[in-house]
Amino acid sequence: MIRKVDHLGIAVRSIEEARGFWEALGLAIEGVEEVPQEKVRVAMLRCGETRLELLEPTAPDSPIAKFIEQRGPGIHHVCLASDDLAADDARLRGSGARLLRERPTPGAGGALVQFVHPKSAGGVLVELSQGGHGE
Image (cartoon, rainbow, N blue to C red; front, side, top):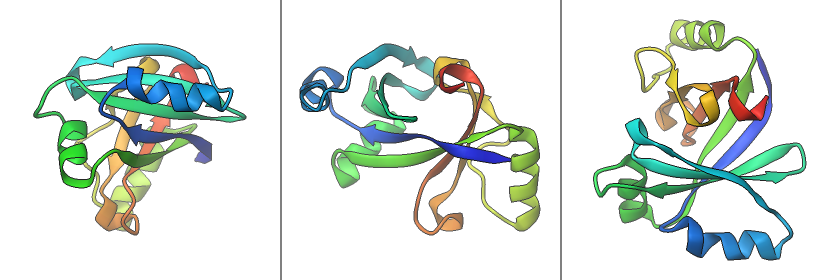
């Protein structure tokens, strides 16, 4: 079941360049990690009960690099925290939603993640996440 908005993913060309704005607002980067299978570096900033996730591509063929090339930097996805990702995955499949992965996969911070195609979510890329640093 979905419990809350976990984070908003924001595509940036460079975490180092982007961080100044967020830090000027009083937000601090909690940590930066690389997610090699996604070809991305991730920086998390806590903002109340949710977080902002800065996504920097590490390769020209990464999904984030392609996103920035097509749309420019900006909001990439909304992540919802799940307490049972397997059940949410099955429920969405049963409803006919298009999921981007065959099954949930490891994501940043040790979480398991699944993505819902924007065509199934009103034009929004939705990430479902269970566990990891958001817990």
